[in-house]
Length: 154
Image (tube, rainbow, N blue to C red; front, side, top):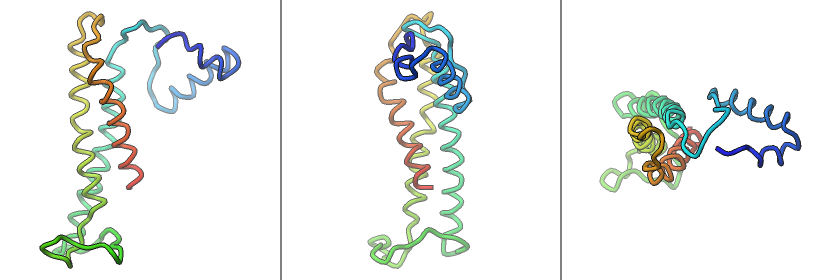
């Protein structure tokens, strides 16, 4: 939002700023709005959050399959098991897939984020309301951080 004056300062010229925005838009595969006001279409938020949820779904599927493949019944694949790592308190010999379980847990949280973004978009009154501002303060950082942690773990 705004006039991108900070980008012009960073890029040293208006042409470089436009090139910078084009690079980011292309890299993210998201169209930017040429002009915005204090409120903008929250559909762009929904698109971003849904893309992150799609990434989380892929990570979830991989981790869930790995957990199954690590089971004693199948035993085809598994996470590394550190020397000092212990299994569960009831079964110390068990090799818990802690990384895959972490990915699945984070992905579940990310999976519901598009619903909040959808509601922010669909329930915006003539795009003149900021009643979504409180949830957006946590929606974006938490969703990005969760996906970031999943990708690092993968």
